[in-house]
Image (tube, rainbow, N blue to C red; front, side):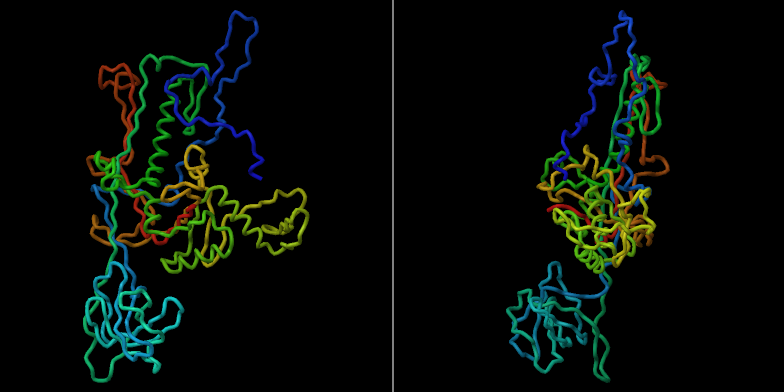
Length: 482
């Protein structure tokens, strides 16, 4: 049980204020008047392994330039027409009825005379079939029922949401005129704006000329006995991580907020976009086939993308593995001590023996669509989202995973002025022929090879201007608590 794991190792959350080897981290009691020489390890021990968390967008997205402060794109609307909040005051058994559409943001109904409609009662599922005989106003229309019994239930009022109506065809008498009016295609327009990210590292010239006894190393392979090299390279790695996490976590500044008042506008990160325009699983982690069936059925209503990748935290990964293992054909279900059921380990190759290292994990499964599972370090890292409370009071709660559709989609790019194929997730960075702001770095000062000022120091600057475009957010699923 997790409660049996005691004495949790601590971790350093704040960077050191001093750019030198610190006393609390290294041996300092060297007494050269003592005849005994301490046995020391010169090379720094990498106790946390690879500490960087940037990898998600490199796996699922792409980067492309933009030359505007605003990125806009259009996504296709629905092809067919359906209203789910429709009311009528007609009596039970009426042969004709006037219906009113009360769906939000519907100013004009796309219903025309001669079209045939299905009218279903939301509460019970019983239905009528009818033909539209008149369009009375912007949001009302009259139908004649095909059933001799007329309207199946009494109407509760034109302003209610008693019925769902969708169009399934049309019918015209011989020798009559054609369809009255036509329909224009509708697009949904979305936009995002890039934000500027910066960082800086500085070291004075004297410290650059000071060598240490500890050989330092970083994840990008930089090694040596000069301490400032470690700090500079870690600043660079930290900035590269922030280039990704900012695209994941960014939110727009709301009107009247402190950030907006100070002149900041924010941006729409992946979590914000999916939480507002995508699908959200609010129960934390789906761990049964019934849970995934509900997700599959929701995806059926959306783009029905055949292949999807679920980026998960460690608990989510375990839950999926346990769910799939429980479906094993040799799972006997026999009760044993403690109320636990025994399971045969037959998944994988079926030539198990005592010397075999059994793989208890699964990389994916198919249930209506293909789902591939991938651990997401960002959700596990204790200095980032790892270990956050499940009772978080924020709008998105604690995120446990994100389902991302694989492949690309067609959108109308207003900058290019034509349809373009784009990955569902991609980053747009500011760039022209004169200025490329994808990843800028430069050195100032009078040390370390820089000769730009009389400052006795080397300053390394980092800058990027970018935003993330989440196309087809209706095909994404955000898994979170609350």
